[in-house]
Each structure stands twice: as structure tokens, then as C-alpha cells.
Length: 495
Image (tube, rainbow, N blue to C red; front, side):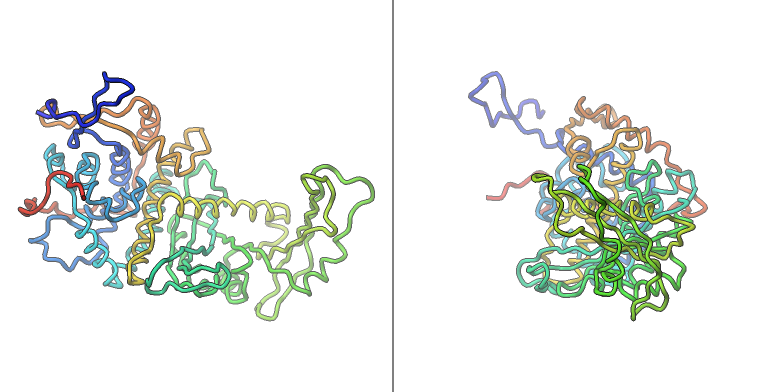
């Protein structure tokens, strides 16, 4: 038995401590079981796999697409960004239990797929345009499933879409990676769209995730391809929201985008780049009251006249925001007040200028979400082909969405401040021991995380997926195929 396994470490500081390895019984990634439970309740990876075309001979393969997707997405959610990590995780008991698509205690004895098999998964997803389209479409579908399951089938009254682009630094000769003059780096320059309830990422009604994404070449402008992208993102969000409005920064406040949104009767608010015409209109409002300024300085919000630029098909409401803050060290005001402009299709009767400014400022949280993605989940886009790197990006966004569901359920219990790293270290990276009892697998998790798990599990148990929207998936379970003779059943250490 493994009780007789030799010790490989006896620390000098305390000779009573003996360290040994029991790979089939111990895991530091018990959170995979929590991810699988959330995944299974909403049929996330099952639904995605059902939309994909698999060119392999089904009678000769050991791992189905759903099992490969689980392994990859769960690994990204747990912080394993390199594909080489999958060789080691193939033997982790939590990944074995959480990844296989069949019940029973025998899953503990079977390894998961190797890194070369996952490389072939990337080929399967990237070589077929239908599969890439299904991956993009599943982003919004996953968020929709979570929103409707948590709301007992009720759509959001109003959702806000945030549109942005960001750089992903590239090294080497990856297809489509190019030097960008603004960032002064060789990058990819993807577009992403994220959703929140009423524009508030701390809303008690859960809606937080990426609903659309598109990888682009590195040298493109921020707003390149943005018009069709925004309209597609709105369409996907309307699957779970009755009303959708859009927020964006100055890079996207171009005539083509504004005209398309207005033509589709989609409300928006975005920042405008300063120009000589607008600065002239702002001039009469850039004054300071007589007397000593208050410690916090001044802020004024002014509804200017409707303004129409040459590229705009209509006149839009423009709001001037004047910010006059003292230097935090000297307490002195700057020589001139700082000011910027917002453009919107909202009428003053529906939303005041102050309300729109507050609404716009909340998009800063979306920028934080993009930063979280880069710090915690996004792998290096190091594959030679552009399409392969888009697959890596989309799978990382799926891992983000799945982890964000756990984060949302935690925050819905009353405690805020759960950034993605904290969710991972405090909840998902949980130590556990797996015991066998009859035909059962008993997982003993660390007591330090049990109270957090109980809160999440109680929330997940309330989810009710509307069957009128998503009928049960009836895919038959595949017959078990034994691993090949050359497959390693334990971790092989590389020299």
C-alpha cells in the first residue's frame, strides 16, 4: 500500500516531520470539483462540445472533445497557463475526477490526456472555421446560461456592454503579431465585449463576463472592425437582457460606430477626443469661482448643445465635464482646469448628465477585468498560426467566465472584494485527500476552505437552467477505450 511509500524529504528544522508523495490521493487543486459542478449544472462544456465538428474517428479515440475542453479550461482557471503543465495535471486526482465524462470510482485510476493530445485539440478547433465560430458564440451562451439559471429564467431588465481593445505582447514569429506604434511593442490587438447588470459590476443580480471577442492583427487601430463587432455583441446579449446599452472610450467614438448604434436604436455613452470646435464650446465654462477652493477641488457637468461632426449622420448630445483638482502635495490648483467630453444618445429626460457621467466612470471596472484576465489566466499566445492563438484566447475567456461565476456567487452572499486571484488562492487552490470507501470516492478538503465551499455549493444548488431555452443534451456516453501501452500512468519527471 502507499502507506509504505519512502520519505524523500526530512527537514532539518524538525526531524519528526517526514515528507512523501502520494500522487493518487493528494491534490492541491480540489477546486476543479467545484468548477465541474458549476459546469455540469449549466451544461457549459457539454453545450460547447455539441456545437463543434470533430473530424477524428470516434471508434479510435480515447478522449472526447468535452473531456479535452474540461481539462484545458479547468487548468487555465487554476492558473496553469502552459500546455506542458497538462502532462503533469493528467495524473492529478482532482483533474481525473473532474475531467472524465462518466461516473464511478474508476476515474481515479485513469490518467487524463497528454500535452500532444491537447495540441491536436487546438488543431481541431483552429482548422475549421465552424469551430472557431462556435467558440466565439459560446462566450455569450455561457453568460446567458448563468444569468437565466440564477434568475429562474428571468432576463435582465437592462444590461450594459463595455467595448475595449487591449495589447497582448508577442515574441517570435507568430502569425499576425505586429509592431504597434502606440504601444511600442509587437502585439496582438484583440477586441473584447463584457457585460454587467445596469453597468454595475458589483450588482446583486449576477451578470459579469465576456460575451464576445475577436483576435486581431497587432498593427490595427483600436476601432478597426468595431462596428460589426459591437452589433454582434449586442445581439448575443439580448439573449438574456431586455434592454442593452453600450459604453466605450474615445477610441471607439467614431462616426461609423455612432451611426450604426443610433440606427439600431441602441443607447450609448462614450468619451470624445477633444478638438478645437468642442474646446471653443467649452471655453465659457472653464471658469473658477472667486475665493479659496475647497480641499477636494471643483467638478462641473454641463449639457452642451447637440453637436454633429462631419462623419456623424445625426446630431448627438454632448456633455462637458470640468475637473479642477488641487495637487495632492502642494494643494494648489493647476494653471487651467482639466476637461473632457461625453457623447450619448440618451435624452436628458431619460438620463441626466450627472447620471451618465457616473455610469461612464463605472466602465473602469471593466478595464480591471481585462487586467485580471491578463494577470491570472491568459496564456502566452506563442503558437505559430494566428487561428491557433485565437483558440487560446477564446479558451482563456471561457476559463475567466467560469471562474467569474464562482466569484459572483461568493459576492452575492454579502462579501465583496473577491478579485480573481483571491478566488483562486482562497477557494479553488484547495488541498484535499481522496479516500476510497466501497464504490465511493471521499474527498476530504482543507478545513480552511470548507466554509467558503459551503457558501458556493449552496448557491449553485439553486441554479435552474430553463429547459424551454436549452433542452437537455442527450449525447450518448462514449464507450471506454483503454489507454495505449506506451501511456504513462504516473508522472514522469523530465531530466
